[in-house]
Length: 482
Image: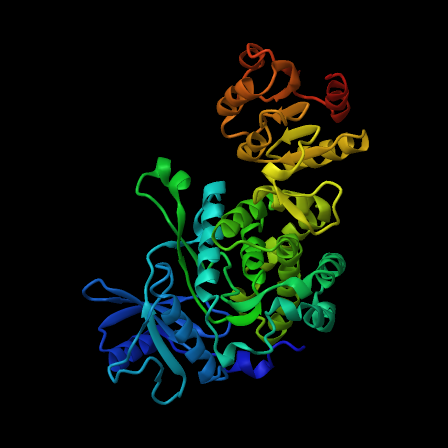
């Protein structure tokens, strides 16, 4: 499948701020000033009226079929009474939901303005914020589950179901040889995972573009609580809607949220945990989220390389490419099985012991593992888990205390709990919980500067290893627990 023809980029509207304000006045009766908003192939303007009202004026690419705009409008109307965080379409003076700009003939729409700042500018991305993003995408997909329109059944270059031909046709345009090889490797691994599971994927109408500029975040007025309390309040721009794999939607959200992040897998786990709570994923879909997220970054790299050939001066087309180049190596370094385990764990599911791959059971149905390992840093969690497994232990490794706590059930407890306090947000709560739920000499604590001191941990009677500590030291301590 090809990228859009060059004519699509060449037919992007070219209105200046005065022209946008004139359209608002003539078509919608609004006396407003205009400021430009970013767009890949259309034009968007924020309008501010003299009375302080705000709207978004959307001017479509001349090559955009009217039917696709009608589909977007229908989708926004369909979800309007189910979710509060998507725009609504407003009519022209003549009562039309799609107007036509005089002279140019471009289709024009006016939608409500959602107050918030783009996720791209929101600063720190806490676990709570990422879960909020997952919940929002999940609620939107649930709202769209019974929506359909002929126009969204289309061959679309951003559709992840079309990723293989897009990458095959345009990979050569990625100039840097190292980047090209990385895209080839990540996409090949992802496509291999998908091939075995895609027949089980649900298909539905999806937004398909919850990137960090299309997701709006609320911030409290208090700087101290702003990061802690921020949540997703808007998902905008239905221009990439398509009828495709449902699981593509959370995967796209994961792809952009993990750009330039310190822990891609923890980001994915938080988003998937939120999404699964609102719109549960099948196991095959759950396994596919992380590979699909990596695949989206590969598709983006290829499409951007093509688009930059067509419009080399358009900086918006390259806005994600630096972060993608910096993030793909971290994504490639995460073993597929580790990603599967992390996302199943995030959703309260685990691969069933002794069962075929692809089956899952809930936590309360699974026999207890030998060891539960709590560490928020996958760089610690992954190699330590791998070494413990090599030594013959059945290990559950996770970054969340609730998942560990769920396995500390009366009569079915693991023989050892290992807790790495480095970076843990709630160390005192975790230690207090372990003191109640586990025998002290069956808890191994890796202490960290700036959290709980060794002395505070030692009064619990837990086994203590002070940082810096090697994997071999931890494994030896685990072997010594009877």
